[in-house]
Amino acid sequence: MQYLIGSVAVVLAFFLGFILHKTLVARERKGALSEVERILGEGRREAETIKKEALLEGREIIASERAAQLERLRQSQSEHDRRENSLNRQMEQIHRQGEAQEARAESLKGLETVLAEREQALNAKHQRASKLLEEHNQRLEEISMLSREEARNLLLANLREEARHEAARITRGIIEEAERGAEEKATMILSTSVQRCAANHVVENCVSVVNLASDELKGRIIGREGRNIRAFENATGVDVVIDDTPEAVVLSCFDPVRREVARQSLEKLITDGRIHPGRIEGVVQKIQADMDKNIRRLGNELSLEANVPGLHSQLIRHLGRLRYRTSYGQNMYQHSLEVAHICGLMASELKLDPGIARRVGLLHDIGKATDQELEGSHAIVGMELARRYDEQVLICNAIGAHHEEIEPNSLYAVLVQAADAVSSARPGARRETLELYIRRLHKLEAIADSFEGVGKSYAIQAGRELRIAVKPEQIDDMGAADLARDVARRIESEMEYPGQIKVTVIREVRASETAR
Image (cartoon, rainbow, N blue to C red; front, side):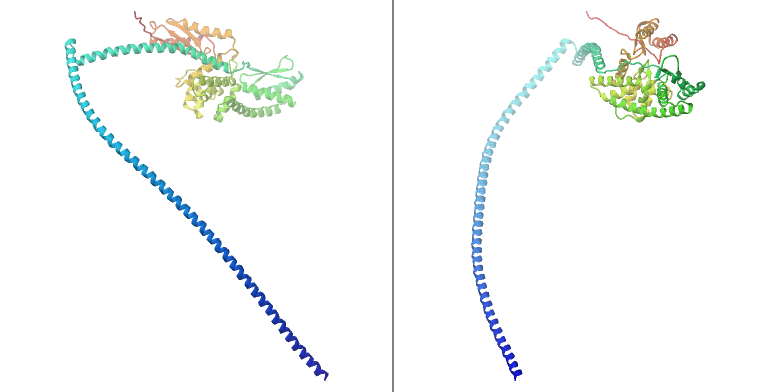
């Protein structure tokens, strides 16, 4: 019984729960439907609001666009009206110009008529003038008894003779004026160039002195039974003079490169303290190797200081060797630099290329750096050397012609001749005394003056050239060549001089006449 009551209670409870659940669900569904209807209503209202706003905004856009279209249309109409007015004005102007052209054409027709009448009148006058001229010419022929062709030839001959005399007079005046001004201009250019070029006085010698810390070192230099000094002299090719001069050893050699190698080697041996034949040979070989580098460095410094770029490496090496070459005691390294500067300055004064002038001046004595490598005078050797290393033909010719051994073909050759003479002849440039220098010049001129037919002789280019002006009535052209040869042989037999002396004989015939 209790079991049955419990079952009924459960069923009732389930049923009541189901009914309660269904009631709650129905209530929730009704609330949800109400909420949905509310949301839908709000959405409809919001949509209506948005629709109205969109309609209003669209109407405003349409209105503004319509206003803009109307404004553009108005502006286009205004531009159209303006262009139409402009075209109308242009048409009116063209119409007026057409009327003016028609009037001008009518005027030109009248002018053409007037010109035609004048041309007819001129032709008639020209015919009358030609007839009168012909009658005049015939009358002149009758009076002068000459034909027209003969009269023309006579007149031309007279005019030609007058023109020839006038040209000769003008030419003579120009030549005289050029001769007067040339010397003054040349003197000014030389003096200006020399004053602008600063150069040192030369004091080169044929010996080098090595100072010693004490006289005890002389014994070590000599060595046992003189073996050290003999080894040193054999290795360097110089003479070592050890005398009573306190704390000094003299190195004597005419080759300055060898003398410089010996000086540096001896100073290195003295500083090192180890002096024996084996050590001497090693030091001398090392110094000789360093000397080649030093020569190249000196050549580069010289080209840089002279402002001459682009030289071949072998030419640079020969320029460096000029540092150890001398002529009459004048150092060729400094001499070449000085000539380069003077050439550049004179070229600037003459409106020539200073670069080419400096190059020629720097290389003009490079033949003196070749020793016995090439045969010939240093000018010709220098020219061949420059040609070998692809220098310009102009530069090669100037180098070879700077002592007038070949014919110069440019002004640069003349410039280097003048600069070389200035550098060699300036006071202090060479060690030769003024007395000996003047004595040699006088001797050269005296030899030339001793020959018959010589009018005047001049020793120039520091005694390297002798120019002889002969009397043309006594010596002819063949005799001038014989005189040059005889004077050269006489100089060779009676004088002692370095290098060579060029003898030039000048025979000049002048004709002059005085008009009274």
